[in-house]
Image 1: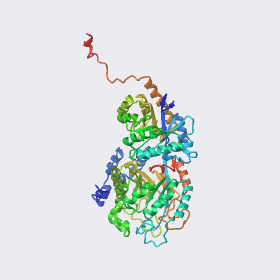
Image 2: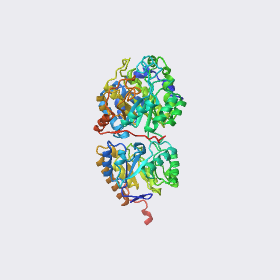
Image 3: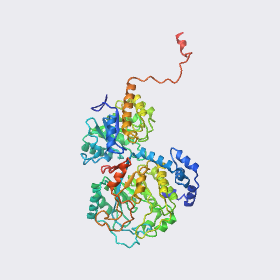
Image 4: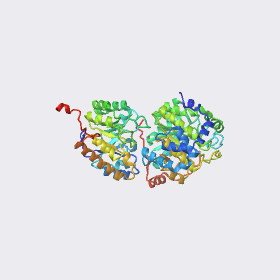
Length: 255
Length: 370
């Protein structure tokens, strides 16, 4: 089981709420995914009247934890402000930190993210920052109290899969906090791959929301994440791309 | 490089137009097959040579839009603050020489209009004015923003171009987005259509997005008024402008509009007609060229056309719009900017969107976000 801060998760598939064709379909897909951590953009919900907000109403299940995100902010100052608003309105101190001053590719700003993580951790938040697959940044975030790291697999919403695989492997090998691969996971096989290399969880939104059948796709991701995790735990045999030589180079040592 | 004008001046209208019309089906196929499209690809996509590829373009446009924006459409509505104007624009109902009684909303009238718009469900509002620097100036806008900010999640403005300092003064009041349409990039025609007023200064207008970028405006909207000049060439310059701005002001978002000239009181007939088929070609070309840009459609277009382009690449849509100050409650008969073509209510449009398998989104910003 996965533990982040003081919470235990049975499901390692985290999901998002954007891009669905209706909130009803979103609800059904999220239920099919088995996800227990669902991110919600603060800008999409009416936090003042959160008991009437259609999107929030559909996430009211005992097993679903809300993970408000700061999408839309451009720097640490705005992020801290948005996080505080989210904490007050949604009664959770969990925050997915998204600081992307670049609205075209939505690339996370590592400098502002580090600053905001430090400040929010001090303010008692459970911070899950969305970042580039940058191993050094991950260690720096650990130093300032991050609860997990969320490196991207490829540009957000691109469905391009794990383009950052080499860096993800380094991050996973040296991380002391959970690693959640966020952004770019386009298919269940991508999700399974991330789990096979030892990611603690993945976050999937676009690939589920815009598929022709989001409910079925959510179920497919659920299975893929479970399969990937099982494979990781069972220790994958390493891939062998060459034949074993008939005249070993080191046999002379035995002579 | 100080402004877009420096790049713009290296182009010649006639040569650009000729190069668009010289594109061949090979160029179109290359553009469609590319993963990242260049400005030359855009020329091919808006050229007459792309006409036979319209269905293919629509399919690509739909897929790209889904990937980036999802199955959602953002709802917004215009709120006309004033129809006073010191410019003469040959195509506009607010033109100074259109001798009709003018109106600027008082604070009390403004709040009545706000209440009517809120009752329709809107959270995203677009404030519109003519250009009257005597009554409708930066202090008026500050007052307006102060009054309406508590009521909306997202505020855009389509007002006269202003100086950098003016924009900087307005952003702390909650101004998020500014739309400024060039109308046409054809300089001689621009002069002909804007013979009087501050708007007659082409360079000041074409440099407005640079000032918006410097002021750190979150989003800016570009576009030309289709019907004034050759639309393919004008839209190429729009795409050129967009590409320049994206690189220079990389922290801003962009949206494009493609208003076709509509009848109004005292109006001008379009010099160039653009068919529905051509407008679809343009929408798809913009999307295929730029996956991230927002594409907006207003009530200038007919119900049948609007219903059918929801899935083709559009990302935001207005409904229930009035194009005159006080149009919702306080002065329904005041001078309007143009006649709208789609009079259906926001709720009806939301239903149409749902029926197409999309969700109408009313709120996608928050006043807490700067």
